[in-house]
Amino acid sequence: MTLKSIMDKIQKELKTKEEAKEKVQKDMRKALRLSKQAILLTHQRRFNDARKLLKESSKLLGELREVAELHPDLVYTGIVAGANQEYSEAQVLLSLVRENRFMSPEKLDVPVVDYVLGLADVIGEMRRQALDSLRAGDLKRSEHYLEVMEQIYVELLSMNETYMLVHGLRRKCDIARRVIEATRGDLTLEARRDSLEQSIGKLEKILGRKRKSGKSEKV
Image 1 (cartoon, rainbow, N blue to C red):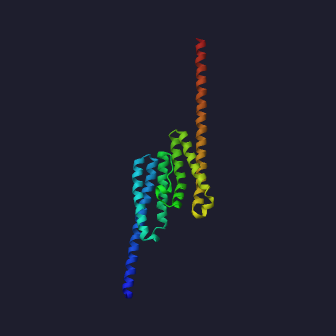
Image 2: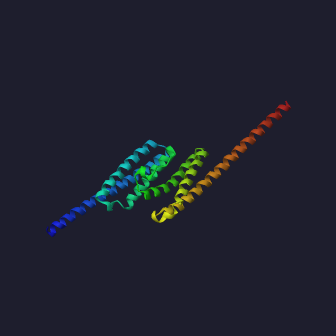
Image 3: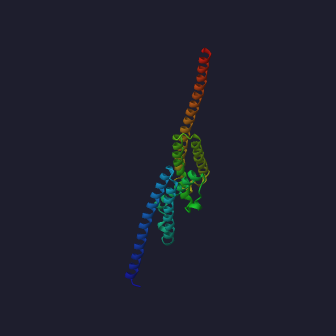
């Protein structure tokens, strides 16, 4: 084999790899975008639409696994990890809001590290659910979402020994703690306001009965 034929073969392989890299980046950006849109649709309670987008995102991630068999070095990139994390976050959020259950990384077919980092981000999305419920006057549902946030946070903290294996988890946990504290403060204020309104309502009823009773006696 001549040197020219060797170099021609190398050039062809590199071109194929470059084309595969471009496709991976394009597909992962799309998968990332679809998952972000699914999160917004979940907050809007358009669950079927969110599920459709996540199905499309899942298909793209599945195609990535096929590329990985031929070009494994293309898979371990930041954009792929980001797409997996966003997909995990969107799926877990939808499952929690729609069915009040968690989805596992095995069910989603994503790497466990990406799943854990995506799960950490769910806490911020659950805060939005809690605040939306507060605005709708459903304090009980808001408290439920706060409990879910705390449950996720506690389980993530239990992974303290594996922080070194999940890069970025400690920072996400620090953010999650502040988000939970802020949410608890919002719910506490609302609970006090609700309690005060109930007390005022009861007082008004008592005063109303007394005024009515006083008028009756004068008559």
